[in-house]
Image (tube, rainbow over all chains, first blue to last red; front, top):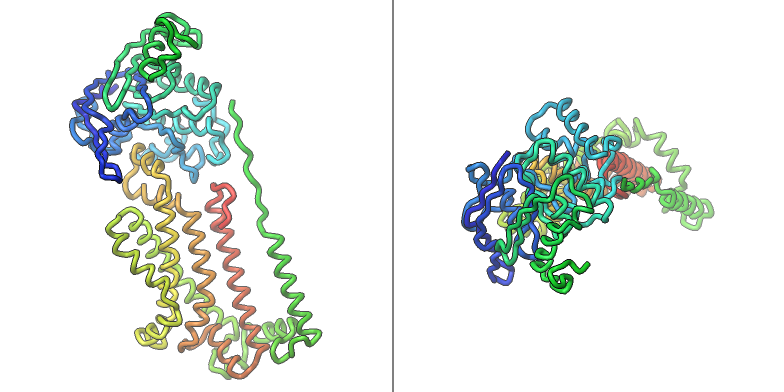
Length: 260
Length: 272
């Protein structure tokens, strides 16, 4: 799978007032092939901007992003993106949504529908392939979005707080679904989240961003498969303390221990 | 497993609308039957229906006015063809211009004033110019309708494209969609409910405008029938022509609404 290299990446926006905002301030990172990386940080720290830059949805102000030494110059189906907002097309049935990327690549109808059906089954939605998105719940829509991206077999999977708006139970179910799909061929994953527990359940590595810069870069060596009990292990507690402090939640951390 | 919401069900027709129509006919009948309004000003519903039946497919009476031998049907067909030709051309041009202006600020800056001007100048003012430019040919009526239709469809297409959630466009780009696919699969499909709404509004206004434009010298058409009958104070035939035009307009609106409703059945509570 793909290795993603970010070299001195900088992104500057101009506000309507004319003021310049440095959303990403010179980031150097390498995401190794097969790695599941979670990016965490307070709102406005530049993590979503960084994700969109890797997706190629906007050009970098300066610096370079490359996948396996090939510079990113625009969007590509090799870098699939699951959006924070609903991105499932309401005018296509579930099966057609999942098959859309394959259709764009010219895969014939029967083959792409078989592939899409297989992914819908894998995310537990085999029975709703003919349903319109308006007939699905928020959790089901996220499953369709995840199936859509995986059906395209991206080498790099980018996820922008995909489960942020979901309830606790649905979120845990979707973590298992995501890890199950990821385990098949282990694409490189860059997953943006606000949720410290979510990051520790999913990630091999957690990157903390603050004010457009990398503030911390931590390896998570907890054994997989992880469960909610894994979050009580000493390594997880130690990570959580540090991450909460990074997020400015010092009051929740007492004497080096999680105070939850 | 999380639960999906139930799909909303809709009646294929509006019972209150039908009740309103029935009430109007009853009122018309009462005004006529009890001579509240003189027969010469307001013919009875039964008389109008008889006139339509007697003159629909062939009419020597209308032929005397040089309005063809095919009766009201021939004149209706002339008007219908004009309206539909104009609507098709306006859809292609209006949607293309609307989408382009939604995406390109420079293009929007250039075309918006033209469209707004065309949309706000009263048709009564512009109609004589079309007569000068195109003469008493069919082209004059169609051109007038095209201008009217385009200004409406352009605005609806532009607003729909501008309001389309950019996430859909970004999603299609990351899935590998070409520019052509983005336009057809995302912009066109995602804006259909609003664009269809614009088309229906344009069509509803186009019937009256077509009838009016025929007064400027069309060889035939339902507007010409109304004009000829008004000149001779034949109110029964005049109302018959107006009723047939109204039935055609409502029929087309219902048919197009049904087709549009089916195409956009993915949208919850789509009321076009």
